[in-house]
Picture 1 (cartoon, helix red, strand yellow):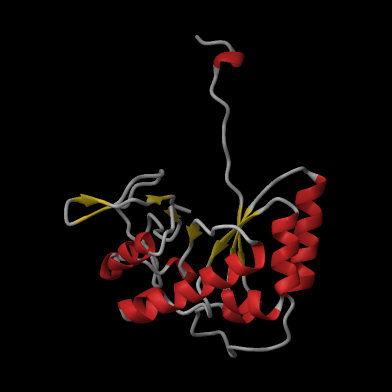
Picture 2 (cartoon, helix red, strand yellow):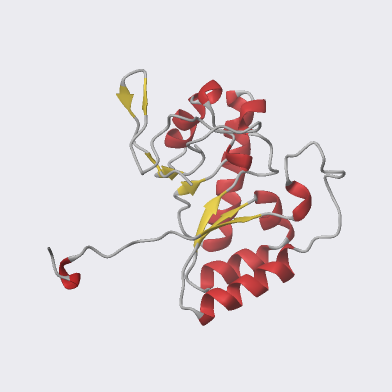
Length: 185
């Protein structure tokens, strides 16, 4: 049996979807706007992460970046990764390829302008890349994303591909590997 020292280090990824409470895509959500709590809630999380010396990936909405640019700069300045969560939390499978591309491109550009660094990761609102819209992965690759974290390996009423791999993989579309890694949530 290998010694403890010979065991590979366990790596965990901690991610946060930086959005407000009213951005949820559930029919029971009574409103699509309201008083924002994202800055004050993020402050609590950032303090907790700093206390435990943990770095996270923040999947940020472009709308949040527009309304709270100082928050995006603070998160980035503290050493956390800034990734895209789209612009306005629209479900990816409700958009045409052109609408999806425009939404994601606008978010990516806004976040890159605020941080001065390339945004490499993306997560669809409510994990809304499903079998019906795998074309979205091509759009992400063409926009320069290096990874996606949108395909949930189970099925719910809103999202998921139940037989998708549970560990990082390179997706293939039409038998062709994409230049993008899928990192399941």
